[in-house]
Structure formats: C-alpha cells, structure tokens
Length: 183
Ligand SMILES: [Cu+2]
Image 1 (tube, protein in one colour):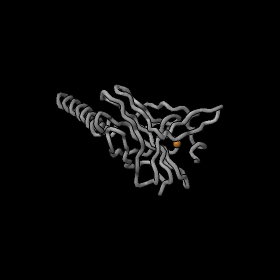
Image 2 (tube, rainbow, N blue to C red):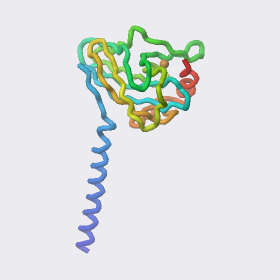
Image 3 (cartoon, protein in one colour):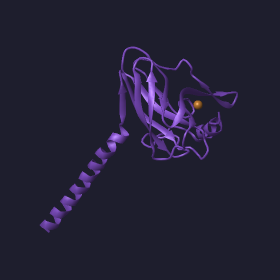
Image 4 (cartoon, rainbow, N blue to C red):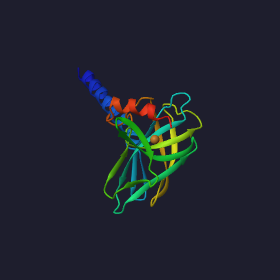
C-alpha cells in the first residue's frame, strides 16, 4: 500500500514536471520578442500563401517603451522583392489598402498592432510560396531604432491570428483580406 502510494505520488510528480517542462519549452515561442532600441517586437506571424500568390501579409506587435516616437518605414526579406507598410481600410464597403509612404508611427508608451484588416506589412513579389510552419526572417526598418531582423511564423492560409495568441480576427476580416491581396 505504502509503495503503491509512493508510486502514485511519483507519477503525479512526473506529470507535473512534464507539464512544467512543456510550458518552459513552449515559452520561448510564445514570448519571443525582439528588441530594437526602445522598441519591443512580438507576435510576428504571416500566413501560408496559396499557390501562385505573389503577395503575403506580415503581422506583428510593436511596443514603444521609450519616450520618443519612432516609425516603421519598411523592410526587406530574401523571400520577396519588397516589403512595404500598408493600411487596410473599408471605403464604401470595399476593403482597400494603401501604402503608408510616411511609415507607421509608434508613439512612446504605446503598442501598435499590425493585424489582418488593419495595418500590415506587405511582402510583394514573393519568390516562393510561404508554407505553414516556415519561419521567415524579415529585416524591419525603423526611423530611429534602425534595422532589426524578426522571424515571422507562418500560420495556415486562413489563420486570423497567430497560433499563440487569442483569436481576435473575425471571419469577415479573413474574407475581405483574400480578394484584397491581389495588387
Ligand atoms: Cu497590403
């Protein structure tokens, strides 16, 4: 009886340890953050591209922990010819997107989220399709913080949000995004 109980305790412990271990192993992926000066970049992700698609979106969260504004002005990557900062908006019921040629300002103390249906990075003239599970390095360029390489996790084709974050996008956003992707 005593032995059985000990065995039971050690199994419980082993399970508890395994859970803790899995948590810590998973934690770097969940909390992956990249610092560039006063900026902290998290949740960089993209979507797999259907065959033949020449563009892909890039999404991320930028925290400005400093006391001066900075601006995301563009980027570059080996997988596409160009990386631009875009904004998607509804105009008379039509989703349109435009290039933010002045860049995207990140005010001090503020968090700016690039997500489907709003601000996003646009990878133009993809050299090869993005596949789910890929990690795509993109060099982001900030006016003050300079250049920083961020790895974008590629999610499934219709993913509304990064796998590690609570889902925030709606189906409507997703539908609106795909036709708009043709540029
Ligand atoms: Cu765009």
